[in-house]
Length: 253
Image (cartoon, rainbow, N blue to C red; front, side):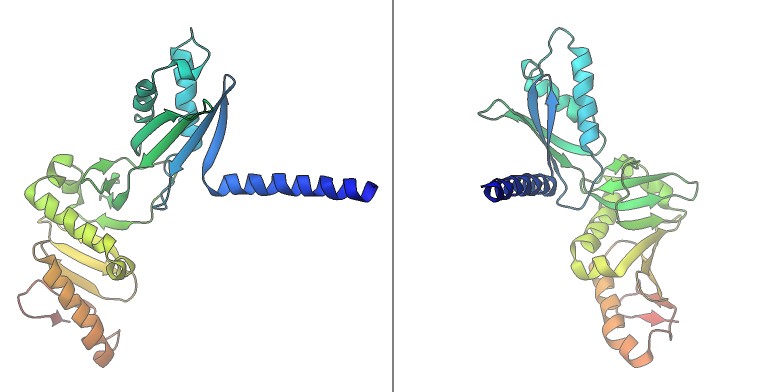
């Protein structure tokens, strides 16, 4: 009999441990606010961790202060809660709802950065998928390609990023991000004052001169030819500079 009770206790304890592990893996946190359960679900499927549950909890506490006549969050308009959550840096969208049990469900979608600008004077920002600048975060640093050089200052402007040539540059960066091969190859884009580009790879000693971002597809094709045809014949250390900006040719030095 004692053995049966011991086994039952162990099974219950094991079940509790497994439940806690499961909750931690699915990225959902229950937060108690004036006897209410809040489910916080932060979308981090892109590997970004800029927004924390603590950021969301702070907004909830601020709402409590701003609405002192009510001690229950469910009495506050859902749109008011959503707008407050959207004020958090890196929150792209926030949706707040209630389930059948009365729990408040908070779903957070984060901005996705595609590059990190580092200017010569020490300023920095991320560029997101919508061609907009995002301030750097104290919580997390995204592993994205670097944008550097004397021309990087020009990219520190939302107006420029949404100009004709700014959009070309962003389109080029997105192509490098969304193609698995190039994402693994490219570490850094360096812009001079004329916004001519030098590309630095993750592996190898070569520097690739692209010229402008115009016709970047053709230039990437020539870069692929360099990897597939020239390197196998000449070796990795033969050339340090590869010029891709000239029509119909690759110049190696």
